[in-house]
Image (cartoon, rainbow, N blue to C red):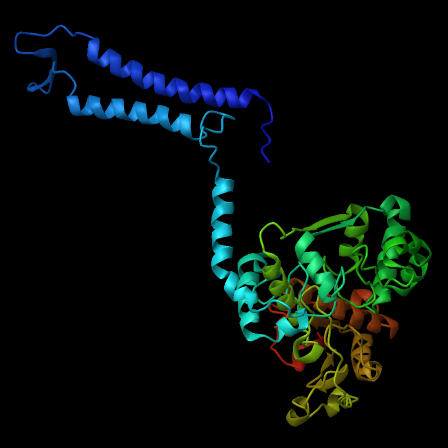
Length: 454
């Protein structure tokens, strides 16, 4: 909708348009009637470079004819079509009407294709290869701009391949979302929570709900203030599909992760809009698109696709596969052999020590330390007591959303720092060193924090 709502603008545009045409007519009239005194040789007396003279000839008739045709065409066009402010033209033509006619014509041409899908439920359509091929094209042309070509989403745009749904993931709820759109509104509630410190405490309590790295003291203080948030997210923090309030207990962060991101949401609020597609798609197209989106997270009878390291802001981390945790070597002098250094790393948190470097491995999307971390870090503590400094660097695997992974690497480094402090290491003897590249590969060994002495 135009911001120019005053009646001045249609008048202004009409005046300029008509004035331009009348100016052309006036120029033509002046050029044809003005007599320039000329010399006996039919020149105007203007001479350039000694030999170049301006002749006093009339305008060519073909040029005058084209000029007149142009003026007449302009007048006819402005009578038939919109061009004078708010005047719609005698034909009542508009780009919107032409677009609607072309869409209707296109829908009529593809109607026989969609007729084959009538009477099928959303799950049945999701198993139809032809329907899914069409759904893929509809998604790529209309939805991928926000949700990504792989439907994995990005910050503030949900991942559609997992089981986490703000407004519900049933076929009916997805159809409702696509058809009528959604308005996701979180009001700024910092004043209701209390002081800035109260807001930080609530942020840490929210982090604790998903067992994310947090300050337990602040979390305990923030629990009492969470009542302001519970009105939408529930007293247990598990959200409410009816309100589009996300589940805060699943470690899935659509709008950013960590204390700062949560404080920002509490302080500033948020307004996210999913547009309605009812006016663009036919009912049959809406059903096919719904089936395609539903099928993204319900492949093979509802199997959940494995989430990438750190998720894609809205992806849940998969359940870790059981694997034995390697036993840490207790002392640098008895450091692991090259074969031990390359021992397999499972999906659970674990520890390895090689060449004086403690490598703490983490589960996908988690920052929890393995139980044997204390033993593995004992020699680091001894080295610090001898005057050395502990250097802590966090890495992630190369899959998932880059910004989320960077925050995850930092939180893992913080978790190791806190563990060292709990073991008696002074904070000024711990150096958090960001690697030149935090992406360390695509396997479980990449999800680690390295601790060494310097």
